[in-house]
Image (cartoon, rainbow, N blue to C red):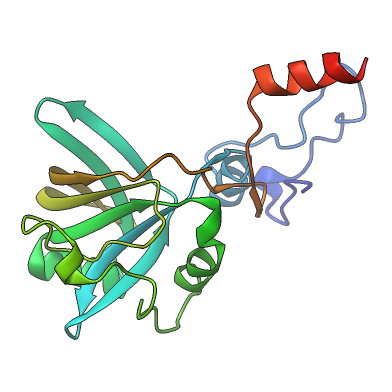
Length: 201
């Protein structure tokens, strides 16, 4: 990734080859430059689940964060033109699923723009879930939250959704699915990597 843009505001600094100007992206408040910068963030993959036409539906999102522990609250951002945004505005209920490496296929499905994202075959059967869980839960997630929106704020092209967590489901630990620099990644514990190098030495 070069991080360059055709937009003059985010064009590569002409001095970038100099040790005095190391920036690949040098910009003001430019959307393309911000997008290029955010591609460098390495994070876990998150899918929001809703019910659409009485069937489980999912969308991969990049903006998810816990807000506070008491009461348990989280925040997600969704494009306001998506089916997921419409579902949340209608029902004010949704699920948040943090993905494991076993869920690469469903992540790719839910990241496709302009296509149906029904989740048949990817969700836990409803009768296997606790009664308090209302939204679809993805199989093999490292953790799933059942949420109810308390505040929905329009910001630019997106809705910022603050939600109260009604249920937490977490199986035995699974390796997380990571994404950054435009590709899927997996993590390596630094302590484990160091031990492996010492063993080879």
